[in-house]
Length: 192
Image 1 (cartoon, rainbow, N blue to C red):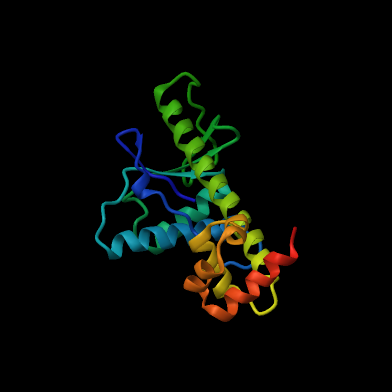
Image 2: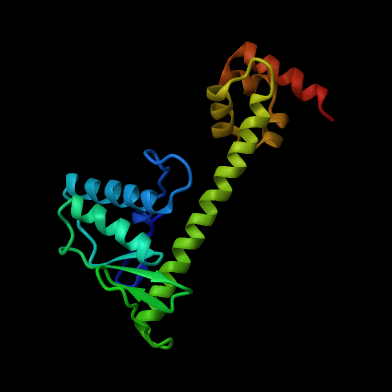
């Protein structure tokens, strides 16, 4: 997840979530590189404004992965980039093995803290939504004859299994057609 601040304030239109596409299994460093590559290659392709500073949530490993991506895009040196580690007490610069410690009362550190807290809040909300959607989708897909596409349609329209169960046969028919609506209706009647 990525957040954007403009003039010290959150700019929600610039927030982005990324589903990792090229990395198999949990690999923070490779995932970081993929996200930075995707985000900034898109900004370049669309001729959009580049940031004044990129802040990476993590220490030297995450920072060097993000730096590699910027180098691949020929942006390294054009945009300053830093990494934040260990509860915001350490700031890392690329190619500098020793961290910088900023005064805990400084306005700069307070802004960096706000940015990181907002990035965490945004990421946690996204993961909760994804988990909820996945659980809901599997509940709907458990009905014989209902697949992923139908489950997605239903969830887009009704938002929850409770609302699907409350929907009339006519309302279900409008969304997924008569035969599938009847399958769902049968399942609803079986459940308490």
